[in-house]
Length: 433
Image (tube, rainbow, N blue to C red):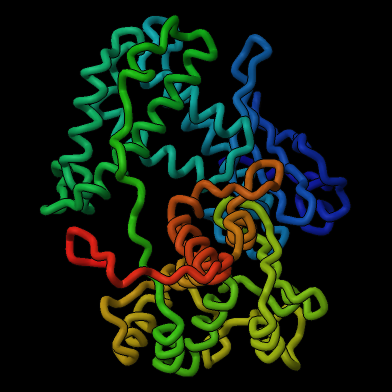
């Protein structure tokens, strides 16, 4: 059994709170040969745990473990305390020893994928982003292409692979020993969009191999293998104002504040469940999201109505209390929103029913329709680049058509009028003036 190694610099929240924020992790030994645990102190948000494995010849593999329990309690899955992070680092080292294998010989797609995942970890990508890439790799890329040498790949081979994914239909939960099952009657647009995302992951891994000079050419997967066109404009399901009001009224008493909170902020369910009274700034009129899906913190700006809602929700309560709780005082946990949301939609006669994430789309859609610039919506939703600038790619994909309709309405309402009156004697060939 591996011994637990204490370290006064990082083994408690209090000790880590005294460290200065910096981009480079604070590395400490775990007592295992060639293995170090790192803590990266971030400004204004929770720190992150890292593992560093010595590979020999002055080379190291550095990978992200997860978020530190600086702001929220550890769960052993995404958020880790010091001891859990130390154990996870040892697990990663053991897994690497089992899977690294022989690094000599042909440079295969499998090796390119391994190197790409190592690169993502070393770059400090969020655990969610790494998990997403890993799923696509293990489910769709390795089984079919992993054993091929990168240099032997052909454009037609990759196009056929991409098309097969689109035609297979969504994957269903299947026992590990059984053949993978798929849902029948797949949505063609959605499946092509999924195939495009998987193709993007493969290209990113192969381009990284090319950049690292592991392969001499990228022609096989470059411009000759293109994604499916016109498939990413998914129709966003959102509520109109009157529907949103009916939904609020259709909620039971303990669930109604959750729905109102989502409609006032555009925040995700998981973000709302973690909000504490101290996260609401009454003077600034903002709510502080400490831990988002992308691992970055943000301040959500509230409307006047939103400020009034949060003032009432937080009135007379301690700073460390959760804002949204059940009637018995317990926390809202994963998937607890599903059934209350279904029941509320049924009572409010919302057809088709909308999921909780649709409230985020509702907030964004109505904001863009009212004239808010896309970059403003992106900031409040938490879509930002590495340097904190608004990343409008996602909001452009989902909400740009609302902006266009708003611009058209503004022009029709405010364009100058010069008194033109059509001559009723002039009739078009189609019979219309």
